[in-house]
Amino acid sequence: MSPFVPDIDSPVLSQFSLQGKTVAVTGGSGGIGTEIVRGMAEAGANVAIIYHSSVEATSIAASFSDMYNVRVQAYKSDVRSAKPIADTINQIEQDFGHLDVVIANAGVCSRFDALDYDTESWNAINSVNYDGVFWTAKAAGEIFKKQGKGNLVITASVSATLVNVPQWQAAYNASKAAAMHLCKCLAVEWAPFARVNSVSPGYINTLMVSKQPAELMEKWLSMVPCGRIAQPAELKSLYVFLASDACCYMTGSNIIVDGGYTCI
Image (cartoon, rainbow, N blue to C red; front, side, top):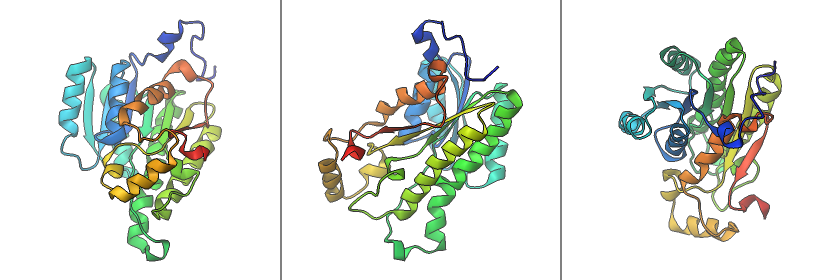
């Protein structure tokens, strides 16, 4: 049987429940990632927070575990290399007993004129945003294939489909475009055993955005029809939807959440 067909006659709200599922989230200790973790826990999932350098990951895990009465545990890892992230994801499967959903959310950004990139600055972006997504996906896919069922969600960006201005960030934009297309490739290749979708946020009030100069923020807001940036919590319900059985026929899709930014 296809892994995409749950009990479609069950009440619609029950299809959004993640009760009994295990979800792993890379970049889960800050920004959008923390709200993804919160959303998963609110929907009843047990959650593994995968982080690289956060000093708050363990306390976030403990807080959410107490708040939502689910298991939330933090794991330090590095998505930039195949073995560390594979070891971590395999450990999560072992610790939790199974792994239903992996959300490849870790990402970094920097501003460079294209002619100013060197190997180090180029790789600093791509090793996380593209290579890191693939190594995370590969580790998850091996488990999903073994189980015969799984669900991968990739955090891409509106930068995957447009060129942000006035700042220049070719490496970031290209890495997110690559991650979005990787989603589609994996969705087709893994169709017998996994769903794969991506989310493309616009300007979200995370440290990546809020630390930028005021003149950049003013320019961005002038280009967003909604006239504001979003709060990270406004994305959590979408990730819950993608992680749930409520969208069991959706795979290979990229969902843009940007206040209309890509419409103009």
